[in-house]
Image (cartoon, rainbow, N blue to C red; front, side, top):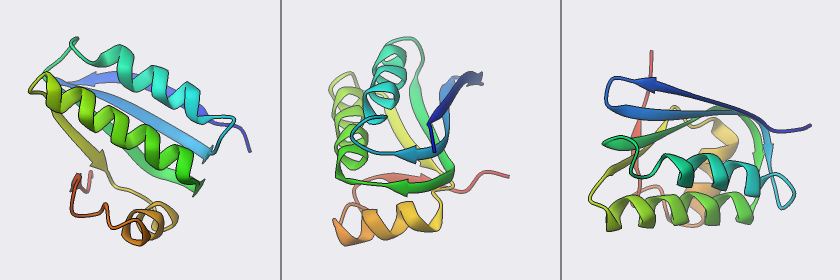
Length: 104
């Protein structure tokens, strides 16, 4: 399944909403959407509620976004990560690194 990326502003946060699968082929698309927003708002929120699969390249992309935001003193949060995403984050022990919020 292909990756669909939608970007919108929610208050001061730039939200990157992704749907589908994040893998080696699609992670550059997610990376571009995240890094383009660094500096354009007070933070980045990545909505992962509709992700069915994420591999290590997707995790690396999230870590890169986190580091880019931290370097510019911006907030970086994961919004409503799906069960498959949470499994990968817990396996990598990164669930405590990221600020994770559920969105209504």
